[in-house]
Length: 235
Image 1 (cartoon, rainbow, N blue to C red):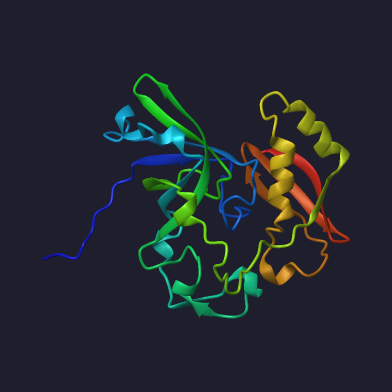
Image 2 (tube, helix red, strand yellow):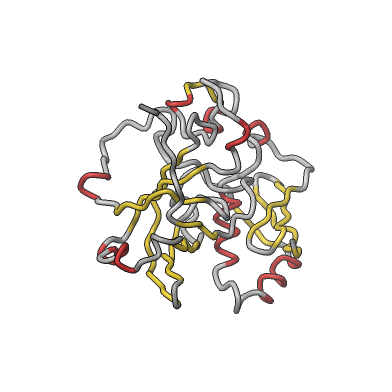
């Protein structure tokens, strides 16, 4: 008997995170993040989603597709431990895993259909654009929420940074207000997580950072502990 299991995506996720850098490390931390999960044949049959609107949140089982070729190691260095202390890969949520599988809970904001196309509108996502989704399951609060559970080395959400926008960035946001009405809050929530490498998160620095969100290269610096957005350039 073969132990090989072949998995086919049930859908592909489209999200504003066009690269791994600055993707929040857990779902729900950036509530303004919107995404679309389009189902692939044969799963784009509307019957597959019958009754799903009854649930406010969903579990997504997905593949860390951008990490697949980099392999995995028995231990990893979680950012929450400063990127220095090692723990076992199974004691972490590292994307570098034996089978490259991830689990994420997201907000269900609606179901849409256009011809043969069928998709879910989602919120609070922490997945990069193009992520293959392998399965979808409803989130059931009485079974899935365990308030007394021990969170190990990540007992609570990370401390947020303040985010400010310089005049040039504010002008760009104003120009994009119709197309992206939540762009300002989305960028602020992303940068509040301090996406810098863990070893740089304790100090101000003169370095300029950039991240590809939607169609923009968002540039910022850290000044006196505040993320200051410099500009939004076309990516």
